[in-house]
Length: 298
Ligand code: MN
Image (cartoon, rainbow, N blue to C red; front, side, top):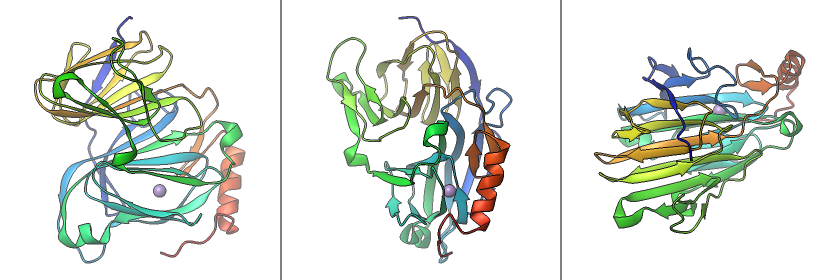
């Protein structure tokens, strides 16, 4: 297998607040290197690097807002968030858990620090991904998948060197050892989403198809990825020129690994709407104003 070339190692851009609860580095789609299509089907990556929130009686977060045309995937590393949407779904995720919300035809959403976490304060670290949907699924009914840590597929590295937690897609060691491990998320297009939790001196190989857009966010520790040293909070973007990724660690590390088949369709985005045309964006705004996204109390 040919190695995928590392195209760039991207330092965390200056953070901004989303509501008052999320202090995020936006790695894409607004970076110089990664435009709206470069990581498709992943459209957006907001990373709340590890930060300490002081105790607060009123949970911090983001109030009611609409979404249409895509999925929001929230991955918790530290802290806890509560989710409610106008499709009637709600849930709380904590360390190691994931919530996978399909907005599709549209819903109203709010996301806050979980009440008890808020009251005590503490370390908070999260990722939110926006996963695009192909045109034919953009107007399908909303759905919600809560993916708790214990339901993830787990591939144990030999000699206790760590674990690959499979959230979406599957993992099988290219050397043929071990079983293929599948993730619980149901997705609309082919993709792989893993948390690789590696111990010092781990050695992990992963293969993804050449045409799949692929990146790795180092959320803890550091690693050598296809011979390039990558530090905490940095994002590795790969060229579409090979299959193989080799990861080695000199310390404990946690890596979010993303790879997916590009959706080759036009993109029109306005705020929380991700469609194919401007006309569809205008329709989305009209539909929100007409109350067609349902009701959600603030
Ligand atoms: Mn949202």
